[in-house]
Amino acid sequence: MAPTFYCHPPVLMDEYPKKMGDRKLPVREGIVGILLVVVVGLSVAVGVLAAKANSPACKDGLRAEQECRNNTHLLEHELTQAQEVLRGTEAQAATCNQTVETLKISLKEEKAAGHKQQELVQKLQEEIKTLNQSLQEKSAELQDKSAELEKLRKENQDLVSAKGPPDSGVSLHLSMAAVLLPLSLLVL
Image (cartoon, rainbow, N blue to C red; front, side, top):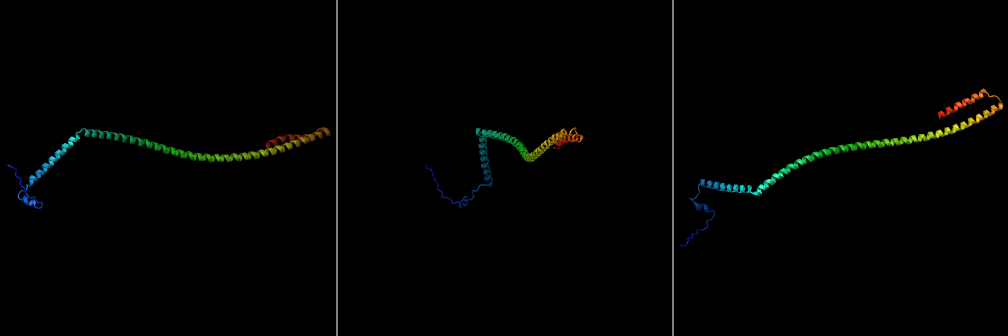
């Protein structure tokens, strides 16, 4: 016998519920069917996830993630140490900068003191020149007076030898000149 094909005309969507008529599924069976489909879908999903979780690639990934966490922890520790060293270095740099500023101020003060000393040295050199000139003038005067005294002594000796016996007044005058000459040298 040959197969029989029954052809039904296509049913439009608007007419579909009308054609089903009395053949509605009970609500419980619909909910149970939906739950069954959800349970089967979840079971398949859990099975796929379990298979993937136990796969070598997943285990390698977990191992790599753990190594990454360990490396991250190590790097964070090293970063903390580096930051502490940096803070210490910054503190030393601040101290060095403060010392440099102090030394700059001290150097400026030393330069100012050096300039003052230089000015004082120049003043003292000028005074020394003035005193040397004065000393040379006084020395010249003293030589003139000494020459004059020597001249007077010779004149006195000439007079004494021409007059006769030495006069006590003249000898007193000569002894005074002998005393005054060293005193005038001390005053200069």
